[in-house]
Image (cartoon, rainbow over the protein chains, first blue to last red):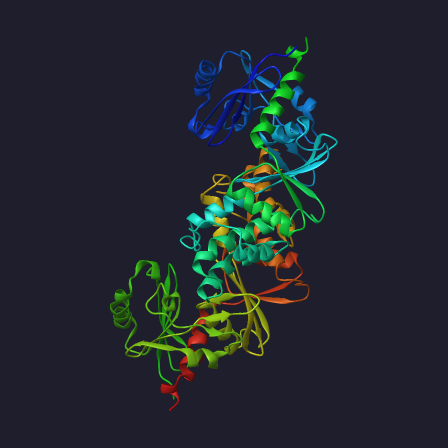
Length: 294
Length: 294
């Protein structure tokens, strides 16, 4: 019988930690900004001790960028296709009763990596929030698309959609033009149509400026159009979505924009609570670890 | 009979000025960093007076960003298709014996704008450096592709290739990975193959990082690969270049990378001296101005 576990989703800028009951229920949760960018390797042992003070004394399972070369200690990637059992075999002990979940690597014609998203996708399947064959989308700075087949992460892709939008908004010739909130509407949908399937994305981005200068796009709509171009390019790269269901691991304004773009491409969207997916994934992994198989 | 003229290519960060003889020969030249970003509108009259002190007293014809809303005074765009006569009709007087050449706008299904490049492209044709039907490429922060048909700028496109590379090199997750010089070689050519025709450019950019992390790309080659992805996407967006000649208005390392990518896509490259093209364009425009038609 397995016991309680502390699950930590340790990202680049943020951290979420949960105390999970033996049956997987969330007993307590913490969210803060102690992401890996604010920590050196020496900071992790006291940070984990502090988590235990607040959440109770239990084994700690960490996923996310804390397992990268820029985090606490590298937990080597497991290769796709990967299921929960493969992740469990790759879990790397890092201190007494503290271990790090490996990320997943894709090698071959395409190369890609993830750390943390694998727990959400496979956790969603383990908890029955998504079927064993499912396409997941996790919008963010680096949007992940994960194709799960028969409960295994089969293929995935990372799009720099959010990062590029942030760079263009802050620096360069479009800065100052993209300060309004990007919202779903005619300008966003025009952008999606321009970006989806485009082989000239570099031209489409400059067109934001040209359209504003020539009066073809109101300055207040420029951010929505540019967001549409980028999200349209991102969603459009997933091939034919007609009749397919995309399991969206996100909430808030960005999720709404992705849902709109996926809908425009013919896909159906099912929103999944990413925290529920994450804790389900850690709970399932914890049950698979050797020390727990008693 | 036309007289001498001072031709100024007044760009965002740099400025070039030439005294041209009545027959178009360059009698003297200045190049400095007094681009529009370093000037307010009130700075232009004394700046032009200072140019005349150094280059002699002659009418001044200015092209480039000095005619934008962020420059001295806006010279409204003329619409494509545009030839030298259309540009001449749009030349905007801004002070005694000083005038600004208009930029060119593309309106319709696609929107685009240029300021300064039109003088180079049409000047190259006027001087016989390129035929009256020619495709021009002007690599830079914002790469221009200009299709001239029967001596008129017919269509053009602006790709944010250089700006995006600079943003990725300086900010975000790829920063620190792209500091080496981008050079033509296997990594660059792999990047061109990855980027050309890609509908998933946002994925290809993240792949730079994934390939390095997974040992599929040496860190020293990352800049060349990323440059290849972006330049490949840019060149690949121009359709089938097989058997076509691209007139490259550039020199130096960036021109070499574009020439390599164009060659990989089957195109032939003819390099054109952009300064000769510019001065030929201003000389031809000057001859077309009403005050000179005596």
